[in-house]
Structure formats: C-alpha cells, structure tokens
Length: 269
Ligand SMILES: [Cu+2]
Image (cartoon, rainbow, N blue to C red):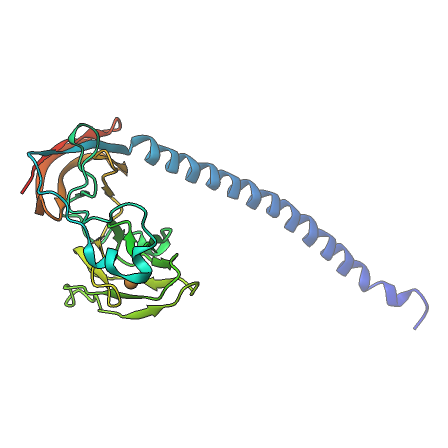
C-alpha cells in the first residue's frame, strides 16, 4: 500500500460526518424553535386559564348570640400546660370577629369529585402550641400532606380519628416528643371535620375537612374567605361550621371571569 492511499477511504467518511453534523445542527435549531413555539403555546394556554378562572369571595356572618365559651379548666390545672398561658384558654366553638364575622367556617364547592391536586400541593401545617392545636379548624385535599408540628416543651400524642374508613381514611396514633420531627398524615377519602385529638391532653382537638378538589377555603377571624381560580360555571357552594352548620348551608352561584360573591348567614345554636 502506498502512502496516501490509506487516507482515501477516510475522506467520504469525514464528509459524511460533516454532513451529519450540519444536518444535526440544522435540526437542533428546528427542534429548539419548535420547543420554543410549544412553550409559548403552553404559556398562552396557562395564561388563558388563569385569565378566565375567577375567585369566589364572601363573608360568613353569625346571626344571634352563641353560648359563652367555657374556660378549659383541665388545661389551666395541668402543671405544664397551664403555665404556657397568660390569658384564660377557652373553647373555640364560635370565634366571632368584626361585624359578626364567623371564623372557622369551611366554604367549598359541592359535588366535584376526582379533581384533587393534593399530591402536588404544599402541605397543610398544624402546630401544637400551649397544649392546643393551631389552627382549630382547617381543610386539606385528599392525598395532601398534613404536617403536625410540636412547638411545646412537652410530649403530645397525635391521634386522628376518621370516620370515613370505607373511603380509606385510617386512624393513626403517634407520640411526638418536644423538638421531635414533624409528623406526616394524609387521607385518601373525603371527610368533614376529621378529628385530630391528643391522648395526653384530653381537651386538645383539631378538625380538618378533607376535600376532593382545590376549591375550598376556611373563613378568617372576620368571617371572610376567598376560593381561588375557579373555572367559570354554575356551582353549589356550601358553608360548614361545626356548631352553626354541621351538615352545611348551600347556595347556587355562577362563576365568571370576574369571579363570584357568596355571603352566608348562619344561625347561632
Ligand atoms: Cu397534647
């Protein structure tokens, strides 16, 4: 073999590789353009969805005079828990704020199933502070993580007692030492006012309503609520309160791109 000949077969190969590189580069640019276009379309779709979804806002007002809240004497008499309170710890059955606004009312769309985004949602956080659960009333989606913290210098025992066992909700019971890791709970079935209790301190309760969609809110200290990003349409919205409306008070609403208003008046019982 003469010198030089060995290079000849390599030339077409180099040419081919070069062509391939140019072809790949062209297509890469095309693909990038396509990806950019798809991203723009996805962005527009998301923007349109947000633009057309509306918020349901409203206020829940209590009519009448509720029974007086009672001092939690067991808490006061507990050597450790009592000294964590500088004011009298009372029951939280009716928390009424400005203008008769009723706190701790769960407001949610009714009749929507299988729309939970709970698996991807930020966890609901419940704290144990001053030997009380905070908040007293909350709501979470099915499959959403519920993190329970212990901010107290003593042990608690976190004990959810669900009734929708047919829906897969399981009773649990975990001790939590001071400074211990947060405990995680999650429930696959819907349930109104799923009770959490503490076996160490028999006055400690929290009630978490588990919903199969993200369209719910809990009223604030003045009875106000906002249910965000509801797709336009006609719905039944229901207000639930442990004492004033245990089985719920309903009203029909229509949500447009401008949202909707839904005020409720509940009777003290
Ligand atoms: Cu406790």
